[in-house]
Length: 100
Image (tube, rainbow, N blue to C red):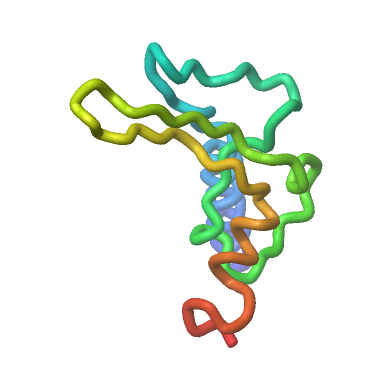
């Protein structure tokens, strides 16, 4: 039983590590994403971390953000300028989403 639990935990940790490094910012020809040089926080989705306020290095840095209006009038937006900490507070703090 203990070895099965160890295998399950190890597999779960491996999946989390693999997904943590997956994907940097996406963009297009007019919104070219920045390199991973430490200027911006890594992409972050607060909905994936309900009880885990971000304290990792760079959690207080803004995210990359780019927007423009196409010729047909459609607004195109990539990323968010909020820090991971601001994103988490907006989703989970002050009773949001029933976590009160």
